Length: 306
Image 1 (cartoon, rainbow, N blue to C red):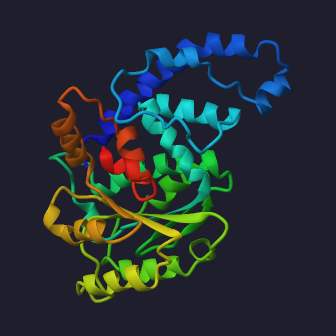
Image 2 (image 1 turned 135 degrees about the vertical axis):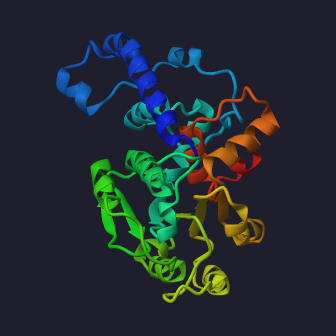
């Protein structure tokens, strides 16, 4: 994870500039509606607005994309992609989240206080920013909000306001990394045990190996939990690695290869280097692109081609 603060600041500035520039088009699109209608039915962005989209993309939107666009979701997705500089084709794949209940699990162990890239920012600070963006994405498709869990502090259900995330992250991280205990609880929730409603996407952000309550590493216990107690067909798990030290999380990369409905995303710096190595140094890869790739990786097979 690296320079998230500067990247997000630049994205925010460009977002406000771009939204100001399209306001006249939005006004023309909705001028024939009553004010109350505009509030209830945001105008769907015209295809002409897509003409200035960056010419680079990872893959095109499938011709038979299974999710029918709706004006409200379209409008919110457009705002999100502008705000965080998400490539349009990549952002379209967020629609798959309509079928999933998002559950976030945050590593709040003491090692998350580690600073990044010689700055005074910590892994904890950067995770807070990522969780807020994931929340913004989640509430587009589920107005009831997102459930957020931690390893060593209280959880919160149905979170919709990013300010709530700030409050949850206000105390510094401390303690061990009891992933087994936390995931066992999550795997027993109704959201991860339903069979014919929404599936579950468990978004786990961690920077090291799991431990028991005495600090002893217990990777084998976590592997057993993933294989035996997780409902594999309906519970997808995404691990976001909050460190650029691969030795801390080697076990996860092995699981990515052998476990079904499991994916692993490296820290932002590492993922960007991999993208630019494959597609060239001029290939854009924003913080928003990174979070979309991480969020959808365990449920959309095409993400593996990026």
